[in-house]
Image (cartoon, rainbow, N blue to C red):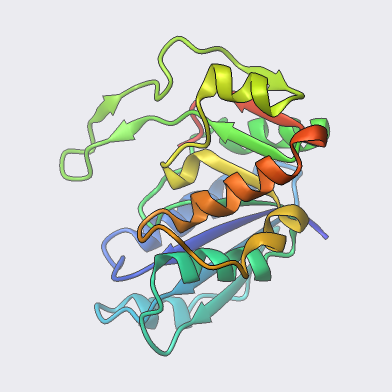
Length: 214
């Protein structure tokens, strides 16, 4: 089993996806950490699919798998597919334009060694047009912390982050909840996280890290 699956749901990301893939591959070559890259394309029409079809099936220590949808199934369906198909112990879903920081994968390696069920991460929020950092710290002055009860986590953090790249899940736990009916339209992946946390509240291990990963 791989230590980590980096999952990317994409739709018309031709302007960003190559840079995102190359960024991950470059960083992965510098760490002793088994990584799978899993990409779900939601029937892109801008050249994204042609790029993905030409990707090598392996870059150094990154195993690459591509899933091409025949129709646009929606964002939540892509996230569910990533959760169900991931082979890594942990799944980190990022956007097609997200660039992982240099220290990002090393931070995740230390996370895996702690063996949490769920990880909520900080992020630097960038303006896609100017590439300038809008907010250098998503959670302000909140410091890294481990939570052993859901009550404590909610009191400090409020809940899962709606920025998709700020959430990392233990794969075997999150995939149990992908078959449920989606209630919200845009943030179905958050429903999966909430179901996982609430139904395992008596035995959940959560880690928050304040160092931005993307």
